[in-house]
Image (cartoon, rainbow, N blue to C red):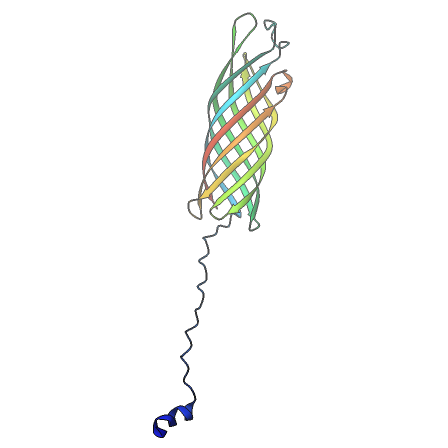
Length: 206
């Protein structure tokens, strides 16, 4: 008994070995995207336009008339963005050729043909950096060229809307935009013009 108790008295009561410490694993960060820099690309849009024609413009028009038309637009764009981390600001200019035919029914029953031929925009944007996706709002100035009843004219207005871009690679992005355009008293003609466009685009970041 004395011999068997000696080791216990010499070393004290044995305790179980402590469990190994658990080292927490750091979460894997989602791939980020720096949107800073210039870019340029091409776009294709579908547009729906509305014309409100003043009766004073045409002798044959006995009352104000409204008409509308729809068609496609396509063109090029370029811009620059700066990424502050969570937020992105930028500016962009684009130029589009349009193929939108409209018809205005005059008071005497005749038809005045018209067309929306060109649309140029210069705007600023501010958005949220969600990694490879960028959600933004935009507002700016617009210039349009319209032919109506044989008269070719252009006028300045404004636009506003929302958009989203997605970075397929560090250099290639694709996106979509929904924009509203307003041209009051187009070229001092008494004609108010509005246009809603929805477009898709592809761009290369330099």
